[in-house]
Length: 503
Ligand code: SIN
Image (cartoon, rainbow, N blue to C red; front, side, top):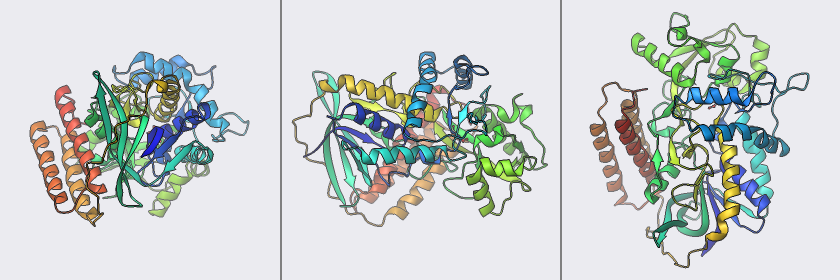
């Protein structure tokens, strides 16, 4: 039987950082990282902005960063967690730098700190506009060299297996789909770490890649973990509007920190009507102001105005954004950039404690799939890579302390799933996914929404998907779609229970 001491699901910053730290500390433990596509295909590598860390204790302070985080979170953050993450940040940053991650400096060798919405100080360390890509590359390079880590790309986890003895439930392994060999397999393990990212693909407009289908959250829910705050999906205000792209290209909040304005059809700034911080208000404020403006005007986008900015500096700081705009025939130095808010980040998720532990003691959740208490209702910009590092560290320390108490289960489990034949059902599920995205988006953004009706319609879609699999066995699109359905139902239920206002 396939066996590993620790199984990590997902290959973004949290999973890789956890793997690196644990492998260094415990060379006696075997670690497998499973990821459903190529290892680099993650949300992390799309992260542009950077990492919020207090590095300048003269102008800035931990207290200011804590205050900004709590304010952005709208009263729903866990203060102890916020303290822990922000005060630990410099140590985690040091570890990233030690493995060769580079962050921009000015001509005097000082950090070139960026500013983003909701931050009272410049404190974002960044690698031009490709901070996530830089971190992902450096971590993957290290991981691939570590003798006790195996990286299994193109392996999709279907479900967690749990066992309950003497009223204690533990996770004993996972069923997964080996895409290369077209087989469903089982691996037993002593610890599982979910680092599967978010669920942006539930929405029509999203900055998240196609892989962001809420897999980890859905499987954790099926295994009995607690899921909370899923009514708080963060919309990023400045996704590049191109009529029907998925995902939409992100234009970093750092561009507004650099001085860009948001304007309407009449080329007029309007955000100060909604918040005195204007373009530098928190994301929830800016996105909701844009949505209101769009409802009033009946238009489908507003604009980002960068024309007044220094062209050479703009191109030097945002080379990827500038190149992408140029490819579409938009010259930021003379054209307005059409933008629209897009689903960007899941603030809720699998409930964990300060060590990343879920309600199942050897099941951890870190990164975007986890709800740690840091973000509250609305994550402060550039706090997510930071949270991923800190919770990867916390979970790694906890696994080191506790893994001795989790033994391999001796029960040999025969997978319940039929041998799958991948058939060409990607197209059928693409259509179903679009239907689901329409339903979830309409529900989440509509004043007149009806939770019960949406719930029923989502279930109908699922029944239809199940009927497809009766003719041709379980497939990857079906697994992803079922996870998306499960997460959609949780969002609808939690919005209804909390009476969350529309976005
Ligand atoms: C951005 O660069 O605007 C995204 C960074 C983040 O999501 O915090």
